[in-house]
Length: 241
Ligand code: 6GU
Image 1 (cartoon, protein in one colour):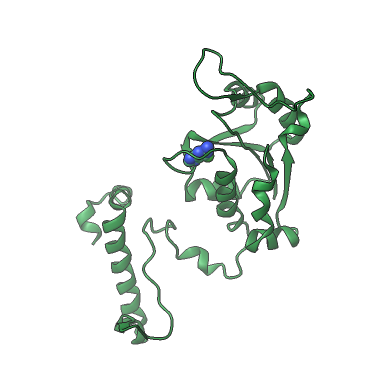
Image 2 (cartoon, protein in one colour):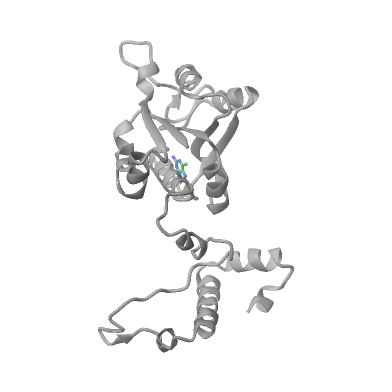
């Protein structure tokens, strides 16, 4: 898999050298290149933005600069991801979908965003263009969102995670539930005991306990997930239990 990131703050993407993603890069499993958008400016001040047409606060990133950058970085068949709080919400399903792409380019906007014609132009030129948000809050730019999305995507690339089973049982996995709580030794810590059933060695009971805990936790913290899961199974939320 090849990933390109275009940003006016390439240093923001430095964490991509660390941890699992850094190792995957070193092993050649994922090839990540970070580009400075200002390399495609043409004036002395390396200007990337201008005032919004129609008025209003803030600045908008110029289509001409982004066009020159993306014409060079986007290869045929690539997916263009534009992180923006006005996009569709990125989730585990999107991560799984993007993990199957051969080439992804992240175009990180700052200020009030990128001129709206950029997404339209590359859609018209037959690229997959995804405008994606990582949640309902506003960041100063797409860089942190890009870090989050690349981490979610890269760990799904075959060969990435040491133990593929750890991909199966996790929050937002196939079950549609949050993960059950986990514990390790010591079995008593500050007067708190690990649930006894986990020490029983009875695997069927442990599995049932974990499913109940996952359901309970999800009902408490994310009732929306319970509703969605029930609907997907043609059940009422109560019948899931
Ligand atoms: Cl993708 N970008 C920005 N600037 N803010 C966000 C976001 C993205 N997702 C949530 N908030």
